[in-house]
Image (tube, rainbow, N blue to C red; front, side, top):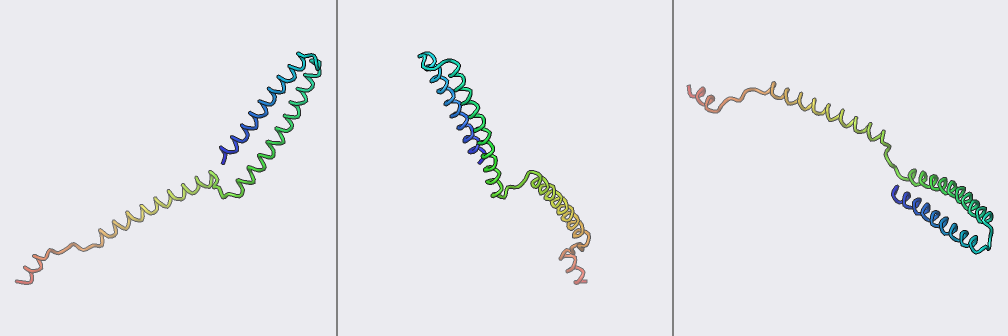
Length: 126
């Protein structure tokens, strides 16, 4: 999603840059042909850049709002939430390991030693 937004923004910037170059070339050509004065040409280019800058800020604001709106519709986990969950999982794993170890030790202690069958038969035979 983020890549798509970046591509969209970069495309807009590239388009504005290309438009500015074309405008500058057109103005230079008009100045060279004495159809407009150099001062008028600069004024046209300056106005274009002022309008472009204001449109750019407006565009960035709109993209920011759209991005926040899209992100809010998805239930993305925050990095802090993920870190907290990882800590809880580790704590539970440690607790489980301790419980398993304690259970294994308790089983070994309470178990009676196995009596071999031969010993039982010999004891019964006497």
